[in-house]
Length: 224
Image 1 (tube, rainbow, N blue to C red):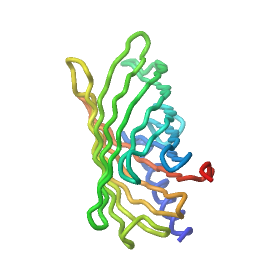
Image 2: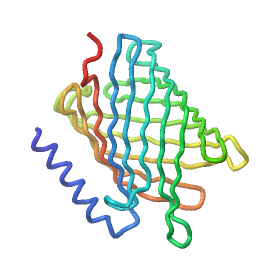
Image 3: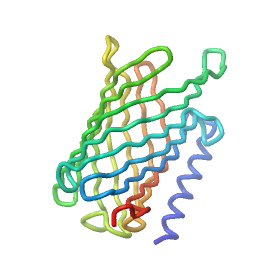
């Protein structure tokens, strides 16, 4: 199974290389959650986003937060902070660098219907963009469907799909929409990996992004 996983990632990587000459970007992502105790958890993530396959940085995003479980496995509230370093191209192909700091509050609730898992994520962001501050609302609906097991246990292949809309608290309300589809594999109870494609639609354009994501769960064993 491990060999299949690496073959799967190699196939995705080949697609990324082939996409270098097209209008397709590449996001490499790491997400982690660590339980402190049955109620509290720490979330962390790193996202390295490229305009091309690699070496043409679009954004580096670092995000972390402290979460609290309102009920076991189903409802979690989280307060967090994010740092985003962006490289933006102007009309003359000159790069402008931008540093953004965010505070955010989110609520995640999960539902299960047979083997189908629905995830609802509601997030409010306070974005500190020099010299202005903006507020943005986000809602994500995600669906996970295991193929060869009824839940995400070891050696499970699964499909992952989500749609997320971003709404600004200003006159030009629509910010963007992200539609994502991927295939994932559960390596063990502490790690799974996904490879997929996301379409990001902005007000005046849209763009596709290949994505490879690693998801870690209690790898540091903080809860004893």
